[in-house]
Length: 388
Image (cartoon, rainbow, N blue to C red; front, side):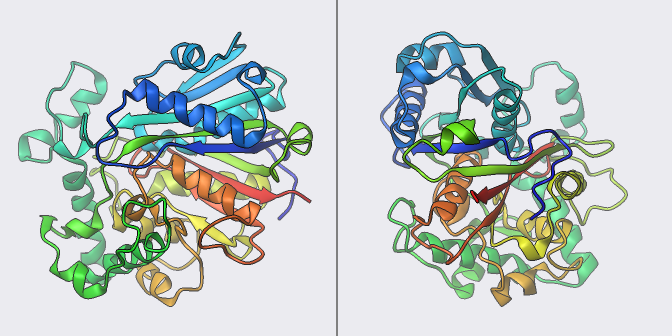
């Protein structure tokens, strides 16, 4: 991959540490406690101390503020703190924010984190319970009165159009579910460790919102994940092989909404992902042939297929066959369908493990990993590369 970058990063930053709590359905801990545990684990992995940290980045949806997590972890002064909006679309953008801060000298060691009790606490799958007066609430107001109250129902609209346009059946989505659960079955950290599924299992699972079945939907998880970003030069002196941030991008399409963009001229794709793919091509010369592993945000199976098409791995309507063909390792940790739903942050950690050579389902010789964030919303993505 061409190391030249248009965004000024130029491979100047790297992920030097990763850390997570256990992934469960009832953590028995506060969200602040989960965040602190994940941050300390990531610092230990990087061979750094809380005193080394001077920056923190998280999601606007996180309930644990940067200064509070800093206090809980024994971190001192902060010169940089930032939050990224739009739910799971923020995941890779947290690393982009950290990398930009490091590359410009605003901070030296930045921790990105996300922690929640999404199963035992507020469950996103329960749908919209209350809507505050806001511009975003007004946009949702066009869909909520018609029963589109949950993320699954919002995705189902696009998924149904995708199947209709390309003459497919819901089995097209099953290939993603089977792939992810197959990898999760061999991953001891995954909630679905030891529990692979078949195409028949997918077809037998109950409908959630047609054409989505239960096995098309990600988990609801309690847990935390943290990542440590620093300069490539500093990372080279730390215990773990650095995962170089070779490219990072955010993207929102024209007329973008959050999960309810049903007024686009074409409902069979993800234009926000196309924006990100285009930015990554310009920033670091990304081509599908150079990607050794793809960690694709999989809150729902249909959007994995559409991401593959937007990034150019295959033609429109061809992604189901592409996944079934097995030519590209995808979601080798089990994804959010099989390992855990951590708003995509655990996927970034898997990308780091692949480059270190320590993944449970290791891809031999992995040198470049594409990691994506939430889809259907303004989104982000990373290209992580091995050093040297």
